[in-house]
Each structure stands twice: as C-alpha cells, then as structure tokens.
Amino acid sequence: MGKIVVISGSPTATSRLHGVIELAINSFKQAGQEVEWIKVRDLPAEDLLHAKFDSEAIVEAVAKVADADGVFVATPVYKASYTGVLKAFLDLLPQKGLVHKVVLPLAVGGTISHLLAIDYALKPVLSVLGAQNILQGVYVLDKEVTWGEQGEAILEELVAARLEESLAVFVQEVKWHTERYVRQSV
Image 1: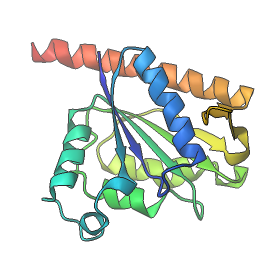
Image 2 (image 1 turned 135 degrees about the vertical axis):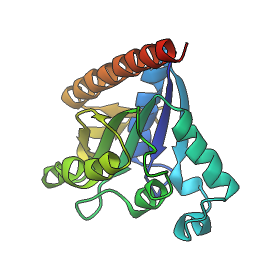
Image 3 (image 1 turned 120 degrees about the vertical axis):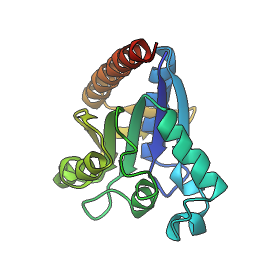
Image 4 (image 1 turned 180 degrees about the vertical axis):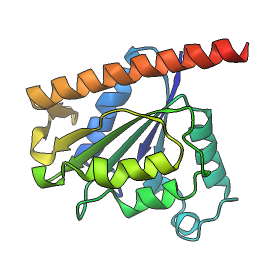
C-alpha cells in the first residue's frame, strides 16, 4: 500500500475543486491507498504568510508530504495560475521536498484558455521542488462539474473518464514507486 497526500490549494471550503478532490480520494481508497488531505486554507494564515517553518501546523503538513509516495496537487485557476495560498505552502516545502515522489497536478478553471496553467505555472514549481515523475495534469472546466442530490460532485462523462484514467495511472505509479523503494530499503 502506498501513501498519497492530497494538497488542496483552494481558498474556499466548498467548491467544485473540493468535489473533484473527494472523487479522487474515493478512487485512491478503493485502490487500497492510504490518503492524507492537506487543506492549505486550514493552515494558520499567519504561519503561511510569514513563512514560519517551525510552526507546529506547518511542520505537521510538511511531514505528511515527506512521508508520501504520491502527491496529488489540486488548485483552482485564478488569473491564469494556481492560487497564492498554494504557492505559500509550496514555498514552505524543503528545496527537494518532492524528490522520489509521483506527482499528479489537477486544476479546475472557468475557461479553456487557462488549460496551460498546469504546464506553465504549476509544473515548473513542482520541478524545482525535485519532482522528477510529474504525470500529465488534469484540467477540469467549472461547467463540467455539477452537484448531485446528496451534495456529491458529478462530472460530465468525458472529463470523468479522463480523470479516472489519470487517477488509475497515478495509483499504478505510486504502487510501482512504493515497491521499488521498499525493496531498495530492505
């Protein structure tokens, strides 16, 4: 079993991104993965803004990332980029905090014009943090996510299939990664 940490860069508690993340977490758990969810908006704002590396909450969140085999980074897209709250957290990770991690970025945005925000805004930062295995990101349009009667996110068929395929590849890569590094450490 691998460990996956989900990093949510959404500044709001309920959003389409939140709904998509819940779908992903369910998929990870069904695949037998252990999952931790870091909601950056719930970390102390002062600690994020003042880069308090020694803050108990920040130390705990960074430790979750360090302990993970896979990192699922999810953000809404504002002004053609990922959120400032996500950037504030990523800045608190160690310089090589994503080395030996499988990384899957996901973004939710209002227009297809922001599709490249993953490749041109988010992936360079993930790469600088040492990520060498960054999978092809998933971009979801706001209008492709609706809400069911139970408050669950419902994705349009094509985006649901794309997401499921990306999540399956991610889980497979995490399993392979876990087996590889467990064997090497024995």
